[in-house]
Length: 140
Image (cartoon, rainbow, N blue to C red):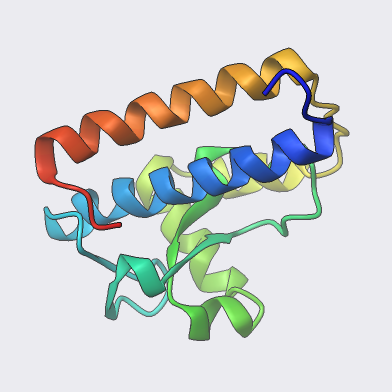
């Protein structure tokens, strides 16, 4: 990872972060790593076919990798603009009243990611995924 640019590292981090989010939500909603309930429509889907959908759009750097802002979401809901209203109701249920409002405030902040920070986060999410895979089996 030493020769990677910030842009390349962000892409790698997104891949690992997305996998972790889908695994986290699969375990939270179904108790296994194969399927998860969509945060918005509550339909059951295979996690390999789900997105890691954002409540606040991906373009907002300050909430891009905020775990409270990203959840397993079916492609249908995610492609419809994320069903933001329903999504944010669920965010408040999961993390407490006012979390959605806090994320809305954070979206206006600019976050610059450094190479060391991105590398550290990549390593962290890879370790988290490995722990889940070792305990529950890998769906990938």
